Length: 255
Ligand code: FE
View 1 (spheres, protein in one colour):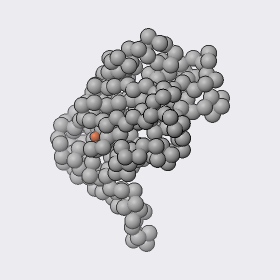
View 2 (tube, helix red, strand yellow; view 1 turned 180 degrees about the vertical axis):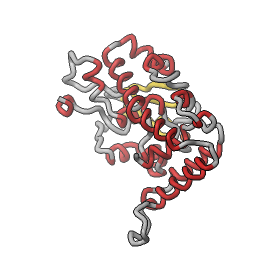
View 3 (tube, protein in one colour; view 1 turned 90 degrees about the horizontal axis):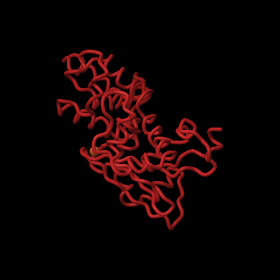
View 4 (cartoon, protein in one colour; view 1 turned 135 degrees about the vertical axis):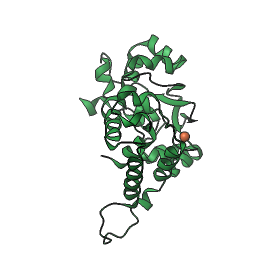
């Protein structure tokens, strides 16, 4: 199971509820005990370079970050705040049921149904709740639409705020200092790093997420998809395209 997924699961777990296997844990993205969030955040912010900065002959195959995550989990399990099975279940649900699948379904519907698209842009929290797997989806969610004139990117400059209930578990790079700082200063260069080259005249607008407000990007529907149904369209929509760090796939990539 991916290390970053496990770190995020710490953040998602509500320690009191996590003592039993119950999908209702997913009702809230914040742990009751602030220290859990701080601890997981601390681990999450160790740079990828540091993660590999260890002696390969030291007798352990685990990186420094992996060791820290394992130590954190051991302590939290020992103290009864979480259960490993609970973390496994949360990670599995987020990876296989929630994200980015819900986000992709939402965008595919917006591409296909102009009245839904309008509802999404007016009140994304309300519009996405029809797609909820467990409880409600999205509080204070704002959808921002890409056009030929405007490309939107989402970042959390302060920490790692992310619409997990729509896009699932955030990628490790989303929490990296480099992404958080460079996206604001030089978004076009960051996009180039992701292999995205936009026309020079396209404005790039960066949205800074907070604990209260999350964003999802509505990418432009690719040409050549006329007549496609929502299920076909959803296959084109990547997680990165809904963060604004990427574009949807081309029809030829999923044919
Ligand atoms: Fe944040």
